[in-house]
Length: 356
Image (cartoon, rainbow, N blue to C red; front, side):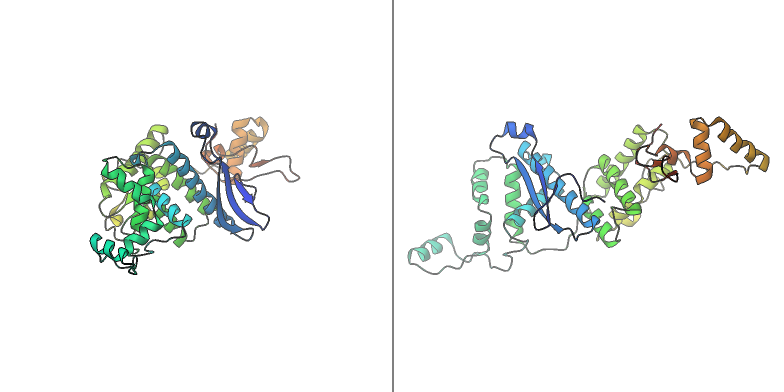
């Protein structure tokens, strides 16, 4: 993969960062908003393509979240994974971590005792709440907003959750978002999403997620997860009425495997595409072909060579390479055909979209 990637900037010392201008429409609506987004990737030229791609995708999601946050203040408009990402970013910017002050005891003084101690110059050791409030001072304004009965904005909710996070020791996750589950599945199975099989699986995952959206996987969300998978099936069939059951199952294979990978979700192993859990078109019986005789083969190749129109040329290519029509339809003239090369050749890597 070329290191000339959109929004990738290299510092003089070789470190990489993600640099991208904010949309003009956003800057026109909010003149005081920063004009550019920049995030250090923590990588340099020595990193692998897979590491770089993962870091760039994470930076892109953070950029999208920044744009969305500036344009929308309603917490209900954001997914749980977006809220979590925003909280993690607040902690990162302030060099904090989850459970930073979890070991510090809670307040042991009443307000009166505290005032008297301060008046007499006593040495009061800050408690967990005080340290958390010093680290996330925005929660004080949030408290006033709550007292006034105001609905919290997304930013305010982020500060509240960050304030709680530094006081709470990290716990074993009993739930994950779909993106988190997929990231763990990719990492533990050592999939390189920049090359061949790993890249194909990553593309299939993104295609399914376009229909389902990101969602939470936990012991309590079984029906929601099933509904989202069904929404993919419905959407895919609506966009492509001729899609087969085999194609749908192929698209969902790793997606469901990642869901099963989430710990403490006992229904994961029972999440199957067979049975009546999902409405999928019936499996089609494969068409059994007939072996051509030598005379038929000679006639076939002779016709392909002598007619040489698009149809017969495609059939000749399919016969030589052992391909089906879908592989031929995915060929891209500008990237896969090298007919003017010293040794004319075709590379069957194709894109995601079929061409007529």
